Image (cartoon, rainbow, N blue to C red):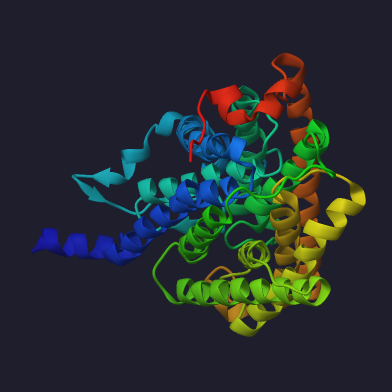
Length: 437
C-alpha cells in the first residue's frame, strides 16, 4: 500500500505518458512520412517530362533514406536538445540517451527545453517525438528538389541536402520550435512549419534555380508534365498526410488537434477554388494542374496558423493564398525569368510567407493558451511584426547559407548535369533506367 501510494503521488507530480496522445502521434508520424513517399514523389514525378520521372522519384526516396540517418546522427540533437538560443547541444548525437526516459520498461515524461521557463513536459515518449520531427526533416529538403528538377546531379543533391539539413534546417528548427530558441523567445508563432519547413524550402529552391540556371529549352520547348494522373494522386496523398503534419503538431489528441484538422481542410479547399476561379476567368478553362497546385498552396499557408486560428480565418487565408500563389507561379516566374521547375518557391515559399504573416493577423488567443501564456497568441500589430521578423530572418539565413553551400558543391563535384545528359534525360544518364510504357 505504501509503495502504491508513492507511485500515485509520483504520477500526480508529473504528467504521465498518455496512450491516446501517443497513438495519435504514431499515426501522425506515419501520415507525414507518407507525404514524402509516396505523396511528394508522385506529385513531382507527374509534373516532369517522361525522361526524368524515375530520377525525380529517386530524389524523394533517396532523401527519405539519407535524411533519416542525418537526423539520427546529429539533426535531432542540434534542433531540439538544450544548448544555446542559437543551436542545440550534443546530448542526443547518434540518439545517445534516447532511452533514458524508460525505467523498468515504463516510459516516463521527458522535458523539452528543460532550462527554459517555457519548458514543455511531453505526454508522449521521446522516441515518438523524435520520429515525428524526423519526418519534417525528411520532407523539407525533398520539397527543394522541385526547384532544381531535371538538371541537378544526383551526387550534388546528396551532398547539398546533407549540409543544408545541418546548417539551415536544424538551426532554424531550434530557433523557432525549441523552448530556448531565440525566435521562440521573441514570440514567433509557427504551429507546424511555415518558417521552418515551407519558407525554408521555398527560398532554398529559389536560390537553387538561380544558381543552376534554366533548363535547356525553357521558354520555347515543350516542358509539359508527363503524367498529371501521378501528380493528382501525389497531391491527394499530400492532402491526407497533411492532417498528420498539422493536427499532429498539437503533439496530442485534443481540441487543438481537432481545430488544426478543420482549418487545414478549409484552407486547402478555399485555395484550390481560388486558383481555378482566377484561371477560369483569365484562360477560360479550369485546369487539373491548377486545382492541385492551389490546394497544396492552401495547405502550405495554413501550416503555421493551423492550431492558432478559427475556421473563418482559415477560409480567408486559403482564398488569399490561392490568388497570390497563382500569380507567383505564373506571372512572377515568367516576368523575372527564373526556372523554378515545379514551383517550389512559387507555392511553398510564397504560401509559407503568406501563412506566417497572416498568423499574426488572425491568431485567436484561447486556442493557444497555456499555463505559461494564459492569453495565448493573439492577432495584433505587435504579433504581425514578430511574424515578419521571423520570416525575414528565415529568408536571409536560408538564402545566404544555401548560396554558399551550392557554390562550394559546384566548385568541388559540380552541380549540374552535362548538356548531353540533360538532353538524354536523368533516368538514363544518372540511373541507367527508363520507363518503357
